[in-house]
Length: 192
Image (cartoon, rainbow, N blue to C red; front, side):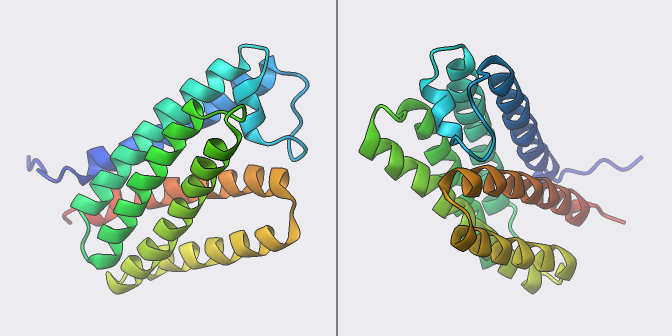
């Protein structure tokens, strides 16, 4: 039996775990705060909720999920096969850190919150662009194509949707991309 010493699989699982934690925390926050409406309220409104939804959002969606995404970004950068993967991993790490900060700087801290929330979105978008280029260079054309499609869909949504809709659908799209990119790392690390 051959044992792989490739650690990229462990990093890929942190990306998947980060998505799972975010989804579970989002669902819990939504179940608790019945005033919140998908596409009408921003997710950040959970962070200042008078209910325990604020705990699920600030600790689950932001702190824990952000930490896991940041660790995944470190792994993507460290295990990158080219400059695109490395740069994308660095951007993903910064996006994860910014997501963590969203839980600390809630909507009550208006300017700081807007800054870290916009930074998280921007760094994750830059990560998608860089990793799509890295996947193309690494001859992972299907994953590169999916990344390119997601990038254009996000840009179109930014034009067509208001902030609450863009945030909700954009986060769902980013989570799907993170799952696919985690799977890409696992598949590319396999040794026949």
